[in-house]
Image (tube, rainbow, N blue to C red; front, side, top):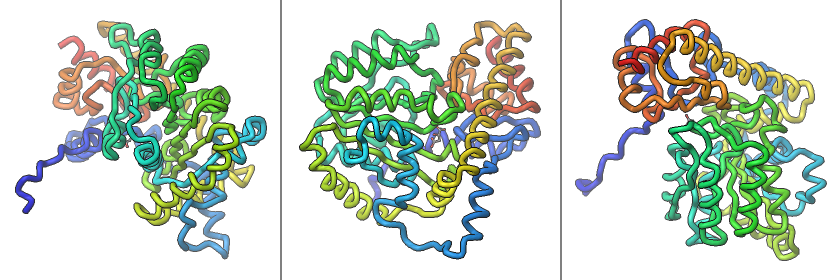
Length: 409
Ligand code: LMR
């Protein structure tokens, strides 16, 4: 019956971790999956999360009942405020045109947006950055949407292909969908400047395109939620009377709850009477998708995040935790670059400190990456993406020496 079923290759990113686990060498470094590690290379449960869990478990009303289909209201409202903040919500009159539904982390939010688009706006091409997160294409194509790419990374100059990016926006058919990384672009760690964002959004506006922001690293690019929401808020503001804006928000990284799958899919409808009228019907269609696919969202992580967001002390601790993570990553970027300079490794390594977020797009070739793994037990994605969070005081010099060796080989 299943003779013709073709084998699907193992997931490129998750497979790195599996190979790393199996590696019995004493000295090994995992720069694969984008997950924060502390200075001993261990997963880090954020202090704000620990406090929130204690508070939750001490609450006599705590239980594991079903969530409503659209999600835990305290969480989705809180998530909306993290992304847009109260003043912005008021200023842009978002309250009657913002739909926020809980999702199975960022991937689930992307899937909800994709499913909604494929149902209600079929035929619109989805433009992804070249390169982009490995899962994007599969998520959109999985619901029969057609994807294409816009130029983003110039491997020669290790910078943004800004002019070509703008040209792609101009050339795309009116009303296409542009998937933009809200901050800390994955895999390149390279974000447009504020000025470039303004031009990007302006060109999008001129073509009535729909923007879908993937926001998986808010707080990781700069350590500040507000700074990292710059592009999203600009998009929502500028496209107010033009087109809907989707925001797919993940709390995997900034709350460090990767496995709890906490996320939110926001849809900001254009500020017109007909759209505002359609709000409840649109929301009900999200409920339909959720009910048929997962029934209701997982509750534990959403409760932890909601508890952090409603308690000012815990919120303050969370902000501190984000600074702890982003500044340790930044320190590791500098150490790695400085060691490579000290070793006189051929090439310029400044891009490592100029890039932001969890990743560095090192510029190492697939052959170099393979040699790193085979000869030095240093693991990273084949495209040269290194999760800087995997570096620490104990392995950064070793990693630099390994990179030096493969570059010179
Ligand atoms: C990554 O890019 O490493 C992370 O977003 C993890 C994942 O799900 O791929």
